[in-house]
Amino acid sequence: MNIKDKIVVVTGGAHGIGRALCREFHKLGAAGIVVADLDLAGAEKVAAEVSGLAIECNVAKEDQIQNLVAKTHEKYGRVDIFCSNAGVGISDAPSWTASGGSNKGWQLCWEVNVMSQVYAARAVLPEMQARGSGHIFNTASAAGLLAQMGDAAYTATKHASYAFSKNLALTHGAEGIGVSVLCPQYVATTMTGIPDDSEQERGAFMLEPEDVAAICCEAIENNQFMITPHQQVKKFVAYMHADHDKWLKSMQELRAKQIGDAEELEMSMFIKAV
Ligand SMILES: NC(=O)c1ccc[n+]([C@@H]2O[C@H](COP(=O)([O-])OP(=O)(O)OC[C@H]3O[C@@H](n4cnc5c(N)ncnc54)[C@H](O)[C@@H]3O)[C@@H](O)[C@H]2O)c1
View 1 (cartoon, helix red, strand yellow):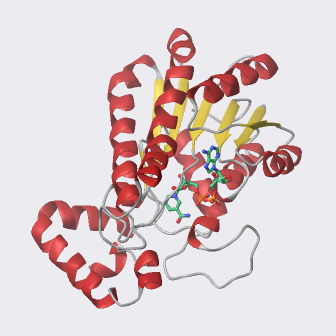
View 2: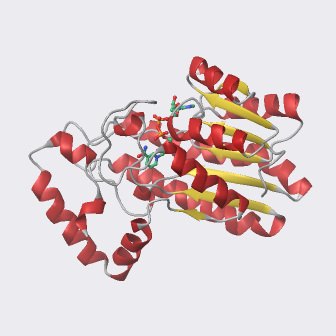
């Protein structure tokens, strides 16, 4: 879908990848950009920059997603591209067992990382189906294809986000509705300990949110489903599918090396395993 003159909604738009997406949509000539976030002040700052509309929204609540879509219709008349980008991770701390996160944390991941995307699709699909056009963009993670060591809830819910995106695409692709799923590894955002606009040193393999956003917009314009900004991800996925036991063994070895250092364990990733 060509982004020029389109109406776009971005959740988690106040910071990080979402903020960069809003800026990129603006650069490419989107006609209206709705910046939705829990952080209204942050959303307002971004909306002012992109001449858009800021809306406070907790994506875990279906009525707030419905309100977000209704307000977008009120101001712009339609939604062409809906980006379900807001996401959270909880980590397996303090026990560092795979079932270690609290039920509350698991529930939060489920609601923010998965159900928000279901609510959004439910809210925008009827109108997109009637028009025979639209694009749904979901931010999952490379953890949704492989695994995020030290965060089982994140891994499981990002897998669910990826799986849901596949079902969206196979069910609605022939109706003229595009679907993309973003599966990055590390990106320099608050989620990985790099606050917005910080000069802090980047970790290995870390991409800038602006570069990721540019790749995402190109993918949306090309109606591309899978977006893996880190080139190595496809290689790792192929490696894992070729032999899950071999992949798991290398992951277990990596984990064993890092077990004494909880902080490093939290930040570590499969990328070093192969
Ligand atoms: N940074 C990475 O390395 C990385 C890697 C893979 C996937 N992701 C995914 O990218 C997406 C964006 O994260 P980011 O890295 O830009 O982090 P970030 O912390 O910079 O931004 C997340 C944004 O989501 C908002 N948010 C959180 N919960 C919300 C809720 N319930 N309702 C509305 N807004 C909410 C936050 O206020 C914030 O503006 C997430 O889905 C994340 O899981 C990030």
